Length: 389
View (cartoon, helix red, strand yellow):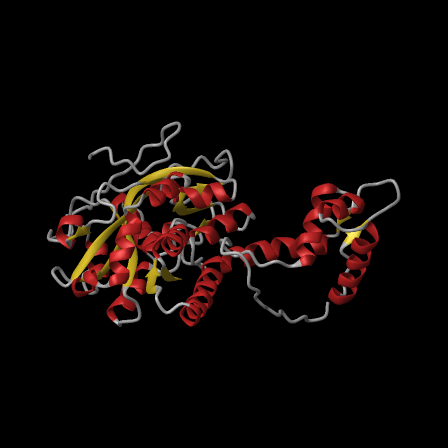
């Protein structure tokens, strides 16, 4: 097969796009043929003529140097093995790129907005990957004329960006730990200082195991992975989900080396982990329920956690931060959270919180086993409710 270059471009349109909605007519065409099993029906679904679709297929085959569709008179049309692999690869690549494309579009919107309207406030937010934050960005833009320059990064990397002055606000998440937490203490204390940094309540959500539909391997906690052949899809170092995974393993007395593929190449978002499991590359991974549902996976809830925004104390009176808090306390944000599986409205959403108040383990010393709010698997459980209160 000949090597082909990838060319990207962007257009202007209504402000209603979400996620990595990069259009490509080849993949639209292949998806339509696979779904309908007929070139004629695929043409109808795409609003084009049979002749146009047939000609497009031939042009794409010439460009790719491979056959894409097998079709015999009187039989359903089907994709060639090459076309199937191409669709699979494009789906994984698109999912991996979702946070980066979201950030790129946010950057383009930011500079164009500044050029067109100097009165709109801009807030740069480095944040751990989360499916609710793009909704927050849209609500802020439409209701408060606040453009959130959203850049996804691991929690530790987001806090470093705040420390280095690359953003006004950072986003990170932690489980509801009520006793000493050595791993979280070592990771977060160098980057957050009581009195200097202030937390803002954002949301609550559930983390757990994302597994294939029906949970064929019968996995219910990380301890089940020890010594098993289940292929674990991990998150990247510097992410709070990786830190949470290490924390839970330490609590269970399981060495990471006991889990197959634990140290193999990792993914940098919840959606990328879910895509890897859905495509059969892995069997299980830690993540949020909304990502699992997006890819038709089953979800085993394990831990309730809080998602916080954080800024310097001096930034609390910044107009952009004040507007951000207004958005967080708005009914629209509450409604947006209700549409996402596994999310809850935090009791202190939009409130300014001290580190030691929000993180009760902050002042505790010692390396005692760290307790977290663990969710037991129950029918219909989809929220981050803390059974201990």
